[in-house]
Each structure stands twice: as C-alpha cells, then as structure tokens.
Image (cartoon, rainbow over all chains, first blue to last red; front, side):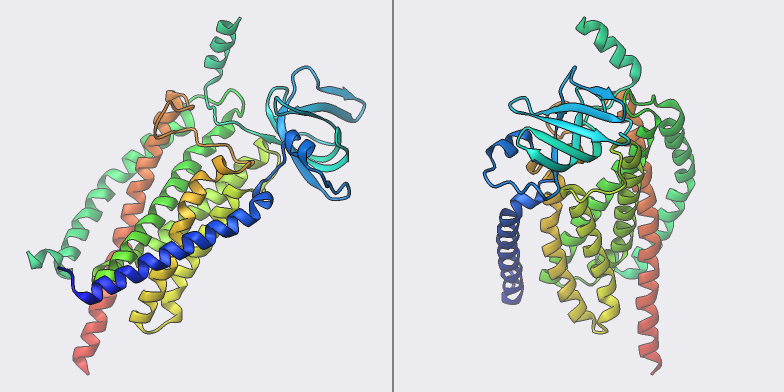
Length: 142
Length: 237
C-alpha cells in the first residue's frame, strides 16, 4: 500500500484538477459568445439585438458567381449554405480570397442583409495538396 | 539496480546519448530540410508559403507535448517526491517555451500572405499565447523562490492548471469558429494533407524532436552539475 502522505498529496492534486476543470469550463461557457472569432450569417439572422455601431466579424464562404468588382468597390455574398449576407468592401484583399473559399469580413452591419467591411481576411481550409493533383481532381469532376 | 538511478550513472549515459545524436543530427537535418524546401511540391492555393508549415506544425506539436510531459512529471514529483523529476521538468520548460514562440512567430509570418493579417485574437492563437505565459511562469518560479520545496509545490500546481489548457488548444478549432484552420492530420479518419507533403512534415518533426532531445540532455547535464556543485560546497563548510 502507498503511504498515507502520498495518498493525501494525490487526492489534493485530484481535487485541484477537478475544481479547476469545472472553473475553466464555467468561464469558457460564460465567454462563449466572445470566444467566437466571427459570426455566421445565420447567427446574425437569429440575433435579436444587434448593435449597428459596433464592429463585428462575419465569416463563411464567398458564394460562387457573386463576386463583382466595380471601380474600387468589391461586392460579394457570404453564405453558410443556410443564410446569406451581402458584403461591400473597398481596399486590398489577401491573395487567397476567391469565390467558393472561406472568408472573414470585419466591419459594421448596415442592416441584417447588408454588411460594410473595412477589412477582409481569407480563411484557409485544412486541405493541402500539390497543384498537379488539383488539376487532376478538376478533370475528374468534369 | 539503485545504481541505475544514480546521478553519476545518468551523467555517463547522457554523455553517450549526446555524442550519438550529434553524429546523426546534421545529416538528418540536411535531408529533412532538402525535402521540405526543395523536393516537396508547392500548395495548389498557398504556393510556396506552405513550406512554413513544415516548421510551424512540428513546433506546435512539440510545445504541446512538452507541456504535457512537464505537467505529468511534476504531478508525479508532487505525489512521490522523486528528486530527478524536478531536474527533468526544469530542463524541458525552456525548450517548450522556445517552440511555442517558434510556432507563434512562424504562424504569424504564414498568416500575413494567406489570411491577410499577422495577428488575430482567435481561440487557437490566444490559447497558444496563454500556454507561453504558463511556460514563462514555470521557468521564473525557480528564480523567485529560493526554497526548492516551495517552488516545487507551486510549480506543480501551476502545471496542473496549465494542463487543462492543452485540450482547449487542441480542440479550439472544432469547438469555436476560428480563423485558424482545423487539423489536417487526424488521429482517426483520413488526413487532408497529400502524402508528398506529409513525408517532409514527419521528417521535420523527427529532426526537431532530435534537436529537442539534444538541448534537453545538455540542459539536464548542467542541472546535474549544478546539484553536484551545491553538494560539494556543503562538504567544504
């Protein structure tokens, strides 16, 4: 058998671990809304009290065939395949920004369907492959 | 049997291991780097900036693994009071901090061309910064407290609390919406990284692990020397 002192120390650590897990779980639960880096269009549709003066981030996919560039302005639609939101943006875009790819837009909501971004970030997905393979996949898809 | 745990025997073993790793390390490093920088293909979307990943991902893995090691060893040390474990955790901590910083810095260099920003306060990146802070506290705690016993107790408690951060880092990309992409290499299921990129990644991981082992052994050696020196002083008086 283990000596009593050893048991005491082990149970002390177990209690410490248990309580801190619960504590951190509660903190994260309370912060849940703030931990999200961006809102999806569905989040915005559901949300009842939107602050139109506060900067927020909207994320999702750039809907295919919606990207329009006119003069300095870029317009596109962010979709999460359930709901959509129109985005207007003036400025430089990252290299990876493209139709059908993930995007995070930072800016202010005009109304529930229209968003004016002052910064665009491209979201990369978890797929890594050489360009030849991508071409082969494209061919196969046809 | 007792002799096996004796510091002078460990010292002798460390010397041998350091020599062995030194003999193979640079050759392996050259092979892995040439795979990562020359032979592997560029990514279909990111182009050549995918090569940053070959340092970033192994560094992040190592920083997580070494924190888990520190936490588990310091729990064992707290419960069973084994002297050597303290020396080991003390030697791992700076390595972990270094690789956390490497992961954060390379990630931000990669983020600039791909995301369009150096920094984003999303869950994955913030939890990595929190881990770096835990490492800093663990390193400095031995400087703040002169009594070894007290420093030991406090550092194991901090390590236990920091241990909770590890699953948060791992699953942050799945639990919350983050700018950081989810894991490409999955423990179960198919990985979404092509094999021509997975090979250099694993090679680089192996080489960096060897590098860690090298630094760790050197640090461990100096810690043992420090203990010996302390004991010598005690005999003198």
